[in-house]
Structure formats: C-alpha cells, structure tokens
Image 1 (tube, helix red, strand yellow):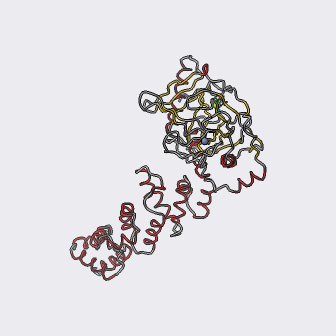
Image 2 (cartoon, helix red, strand yellow):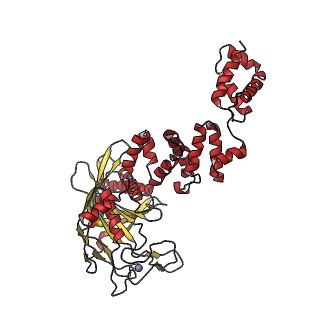
Length: 480
Ligand code: ADP
Ligand code: MG
Ligand code: ZN
C-alpha cells in the first residue's frame, strides 16, 4: 500500500439469531424445508395482521450488547424501512433506526504485531430478514419467503479500522463472541453472518474522511480481507491518477478477485423511515437487563485466562484451545478423564486439529470422543502403552471410532515392561551386531540409538523405551 495514504474501514455485520421462531410471528426459522412452507399471514405481510415481538430476540441482542460493552438503551423503537423488492412482501422491512437497543460498545483485537486495539461499535439493532430471490433455476426468478421474518442483529462498527488485517481480526472476534454466546452459528459461508465493508482512503494526516464505497457479497472471512485489500488499492490508484472516488455499492467477485459496481448512490433508496405504529417501544428494565447478564456464559477472553491460570498452559495453547467454544469444551471434556493438562493440550492442538483442518470438519464432527482421547493419554501415563504406539492407535480410533483399550486388545499392543522379555530381545540384537558393540566400547555412544531402534523393531515397538535403555547400557558394560 502506498505509504502516503491511510485506509478507513467500517463494517456492518448482520448476524442471524438462533431463535426457534421468527421475530414477529410463531413460524419456525428452520432451514432446508421446502420453499414457502414456514410462513403465515404475518410474515407474508397480509393486510391487517399484527406483529408480536419475540422476547428471545431482545434477550440475545442485549447479551451481545453486554458482551461488547455497549450501553443498553432502556427504551428503543422499531421503524419501518420502506422499499419495494419482490422478496419483501410487506413493502417495508421492520428495523431499528433512530433508537437502537445497544450503542457505544467496542470489540478489542490483537494485531499480528502484538498491539491491542479497540474497535468502536456504533450500534447494534434488531431487524427482520427478507425472503430470497432465486435466479439460477430455469428462465424465471423464483421467490422463497421462508426467510422473511428471520431475526437478525446488525452490528455497526465505527470507522476505526485502518487495514484489511484489522477488519479480518474484528470479524473473527465478532464470530467468536456470537458463537460463545450461542446466539448465532457464525457461519459466513451459509449466510448466517454477513458483512458489508465500508472503505475509504485519505492522505495521512488528513482529518476529513474520503468518499467511501460499500463492498458486499463476501462469503468468507478471507474474502472480506481480500476484497478490502483490493478496494483500498483501487481507490488509491484512482486518486493517484487525479481521479475521484464515486460513492457506490460494489460487489466482490471472488472468482475474478475484483469488485464490480452494483448501484451508485444517486439511485440509492430513500427509505422514508418512520416508527412502526404496530409495535410498542421495547423497554429493557434494569431488572431484566440484570437477569440477562446473569445468563452470560464465560466469554473467550475470560476462558483463555482461566485456561492459563487453572491448567498452567502457555498463552499460545490457551489462545488456540479457546478459539472456539466447541474446541474449548472438547479440551475440558478430555480433562474429565485425565488431568495431564499439557499432554492433552498437545494432542488436541496437533493430532486433533490436524484432522479437523485437513478434513475441513468441525470439532463437533470429530470422530474420536473426548473420553476416548482422554483414555488414550491415560494409558500412556500409566505405562500401558508408549507414546509411539499411541500414535499408531490414534488413526485406528479415528477410523473405527473404537476406544483405545479395545484396539490395544485386538492388536495386542500392550507395552512390554517384562524385563525378561526385553532382555531376550536385547541379547538377540547384540549377538547379531558384534561390530557395533566394539564401536560402542571404543567410545561411540551414538550406537546406542541404533541398538534401541533394532530392539524396538524386534518387539514391534511395544517395549518400554526406558527399560530398554537401562538394560541395554547394563548389558553393554558386561562386554568390557
Ligand atoms: P450510510 O448512511 O452510508 O449507511 P453510515 O454513516 O450509516 O453510512 O455508516 C455505515 C458504516 O460505514 C459504518 O460502519 C461506518 O463506520 C462506516 N463509515 C462511515 N463513513 C466512512 C468512511 N468515510 N470510510 C469508511 N467507513 C465509513
Ligand atoms: Mg448503512
Ligand atoms: Zn410467520
């Protein structure tokens, strides 16, 4: 990026709330049902029907507000945002405009440089989703209104971010918070988290903001990062050519890795917002707010700090293990079987996460239960198996979903700790390698490694390595 310039970024994020029913009617929010079946006169916008507020939506949004240090407004109101669109049967969307429920919060992120940064949250408000227009099935456009009335929470940030990295980290953090709260599944690919990025650039030192564009249509965190990077460069190039930035909405084209204009602000809508006369103001009393606050689950930062203090884990481990609530739960569930905190951490961070990442599955779909992983680690600590054998058992556990004990029995993998048996193996290897014994006696200690390797091979990897080492050295001395 041209060092003369500074980028300014503000994000608007829509999060689909995990309530069972829609925001203003009793229809289910379930997905994957046949089109136009989760509907009723209210969400279809029939004349004369009345919306009824879903209390859970308020509670979820207040939880988010509290988790991001927002002021929770005691009184907030709904407004009608008027526009025509085929997938919006009412001709308006119920949203919050002048008086949103949460304001003035922040989300803190840690940059790669280690620097901490607070990113302001302007507001969080509640609104309903519109339906879906389907353009890719045949010659005509189809409408599915199942999504009409699905509850959304919109989180609007201050224009506080100055790089694509900051925006990326902010989004990751935001997803972490909503998933820890259990109010949104955070899945950007499936659209339960949608992000619009507002981007402008200005000369460094300049106070006035430059003209901004709004980039939409990014369906992954990495795409948001790429789109912002692209847009920053595009704007700088225009300014360097003495051009002017046009305020407009752009669509990110992930395949081509560039933005395309969607509409310019000239044809932008005038939404004619006005308070919805069918809905009472939302009043969040101090009592209700406290009640919601008391249901707040442990948030990522607190859980990470607890992992460090309670389990003596390095910050690095704690950070990774608490990166998602499910992973942190998995880790703590393994601890129910064994309290070897660091070994469990190593197994989860390397062996478990490798499979999760390679197979692109979630930890919830991971085939080895926390209990079985815990038992495997326990068996190592109890000297029933050694670490090498454990690494052979683990893939079997993945493949068969069997417990470690069962696999050990089936494959006869119990560690050999019987000194007689180990001695027999040692004798056999020594008698077959006389020249190496001479090397050892002449001072070449490294030969030990060769012998251990041979003995482990002889015992099919099952000998206890410590006992092998001890006995081997003793035996070698007898040759002096
Ligand atoms: P609009 O009325 O166009 O929707 P808002 O004032 O509501 O604009 O701001 C929408 C988002 O754009 C917010 O996240 C805000 O932080 C961000 N934003 C506002 N001005 C700028 C700017 N000049 N450059 C980058 N982002 C901006
Ligand atoms: Mg806006
Ligand atoms: Zn309905």
